Length: 255
Ligand SMILES: NC(=O)c1ccc[n+]([C@@H]2O[C@H](COP(=O)([O-])OP(=O)(O)OC[C@H]3O[C@@H](n4cnc5c(N)ncnc54)[C@H](OP(=O)(O)O)[C@@H]3O)[C@@H](O)[C@H]2O)c1
Image (tube, rainbow, N blue to C red; front, side):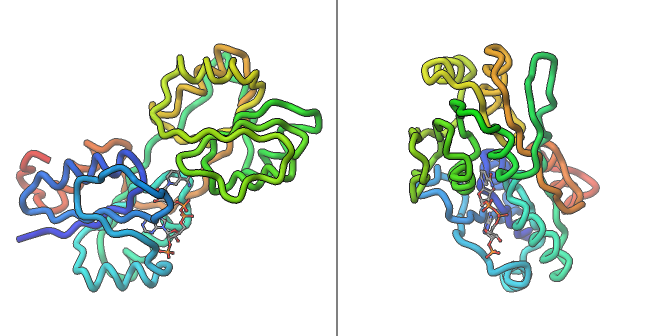
C-alpha cells in the first residue's frame, strides 16, 4: 500500500525531509511551495506550487488527493499556512505533524532587543540615525519606510520590489548558508551598528548573530509568532521516524 504524504515546505529542512521520506518505496511524497521564490532550488521530489485557498482549500486538496499524512515544514514565521494546515487536517481527518526547528536562545554577550513584529522592530531602532542590516527577507522590508532616518543594508534571496521609499538603502541578493566569518566581514565593511533579524533557529543563518556578539552589535530580534499545537519534532530525522512509526507502528523500516 502506498502512503501519500504532503509536505508544506519552503525551507531547507522540508527539502531534506522530502528526500529522506521519498527513499521509502511505499511513500509517495509531494512537496508544496508557496511560489514566493523566483527560482527555488531543486527539491528532488514532485512539487506543486501556489496557495490552496485557505484552510478550506487545503482540506479539499487533502481529500481529493487522498493524502494520508500532512507535514507542516514551513518557516517558523509562516504562521498563516501553519494555522491553515492544522485546521485543514482537522476538517479532512488527516493526521498532521509539524517540523519545528528550535529558536536561538541569547547567550552572554548577545545584545538583543525582543520585539513583536517588524513595525515594532522599526520603532525599536530609535530616533537617531543608525546603520542597519535588515536580514528579515523581502516580504516585510517595507515596514522600515516608517524609519527613513536610518541607512539600510537589505539582504534577500529575491529583489525587494518596490524599493523602499527611504533615502539610503543598499540591496544585496544572496541565499544562505552564511558563515560567521563572511557575516563579520560584511558587518564591518558596511559599519553596521544594528541588525534586524527573525529568530529562525538553525545554523545556516546563525552566523550574523555570533558575528554581532563578537563585534558588540545590537540585534533587534523579532519574536516568533504563535503556532498551532500539533504533534511535532525538532529535527528531520525525528520527524521521519514519526512518519515511519505512523504507518508502520510495529517494525520501522529504516526511515
Ligand atoms: N515568513 C518567512 O520569514 C519565511 C522565510 C523563509 C521561507 N518561508 C517560506 O515561504 C513560504 C511563504 O511564507 P509566508 O510567510 O508568506 O507564509 P504565510 O503568511 O503563513 O502564508 C500565506 C499564504 O501563502 C500560502 N502558502 C504559504 N506557504 C505555502 C506552502 N508551503 N504551500 C502552498 N501555499 C503556501 C497560503 O495561501 P493559501 O491560503 O491560498 O493556501 C498561505 O495562506 C512558506 O512556505 C515558508 O516556509 C517563509
